[in-house]
Image 1: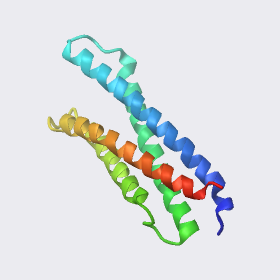
Image 2: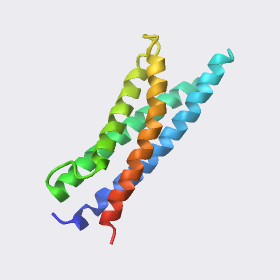
Image 3: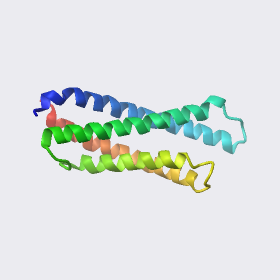
Length: 144
């Protein structure tokens, strides 16, 4: 297949990546807000935790969509995977997002899960920078 048949796929990927970064930033804001109210013994707005969960689930969904697009697009264009460092960066980000989501479900059950969740999310910042940087270099190969 030639690339023009995949332009719609790359557009979805670009929007998904933008929304992923936005979701990450909003998760950081709501997470810091939840931490601040918890440490100051203030009551949290009832909607805050729900919003944080919805944003987290959205990030997981967006990252899995990006994974699927990357696999389909790369296989469709090259016939195999692993043509750039973007592949490794993407897999690292997918793993970090899944670890963050999984640890979030355990925070109220296992005391260590909160530390894993926070540490993973801090590391995820570097992962998102890395995958964005490598993704931009991949996009440059396809632009006319």
